[in-house]
Length: 154
Ligand code: HEC
Image (tube, rainbow, N blue to C red; front, side):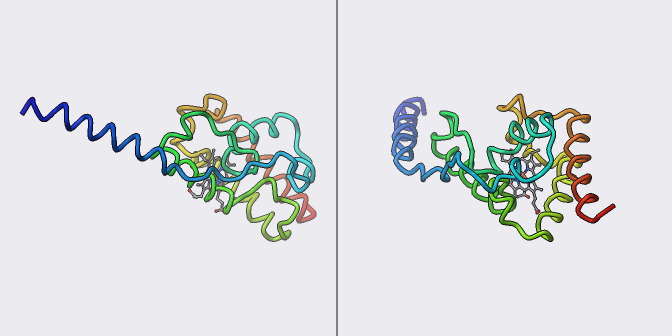
């Protein structure tokens, strides 16, 4: 039995190294975003910081990719989160959304954040700044629902 351990480990290591050639391409990063929500909605500094720290890696064009992002198979999983996150809600494209879409997304932001579904659970252990307290969740929610109310003219 013992004599198989070393070759087995070597095969695993070889497979891991080969995998690194198939890491995929990280979703594009862009820092100049004239349509970004920060430039188009009233948003106080505290909420802006919370969104940037807890949401922007997956919901904007300004994703940060720390070194481990590039390790396959982690890379596949992380790049997929960013792509899917942007598809659902891309803060960098905010000004291009219809009013209906904006209002819907704002309501979803409140809901997902208050229910603890966002930021994704897999994200927060390695991003201390994205671990939101109940008060911080409430701040995000109040801001989002405040904009909805304002848009509806209440
Ligand atoms: C690690 C990546 C990641 C982070 C960080 C993250 N999200 Fe998400 N988010 C996703 C993905 C992936 C989806 C789509 C799949 C799903 O709903 O689980 C999503 C979906 C959503 C949706 C649903 C959109 C819809 O219309 O149904 C909202 C709203 C949302 N996120 C808001 C936020 C907010 C607000 C934050 C920060 C407090 C945040 N997310 C942080 C990855 C992320």
